[in-house]
Length: 67
Image (cartoon, rainbow, N blue to C red):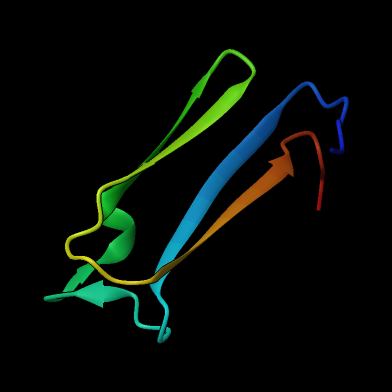
């Protein structure tokens, strides 16, 4: 396990189907997920629209980075 000492992080996520599709009936799959910060923890909650195989990618970035 890697522990980073960073004070300010930004998080986002991307949800796609296993086949690479990112929509369900014209709705982006990211709309079926929620990301929230509580203290030092980032929670990602998903409620997929149907039973299937999905790929979840969580991105994190030091918000003090200038790049």
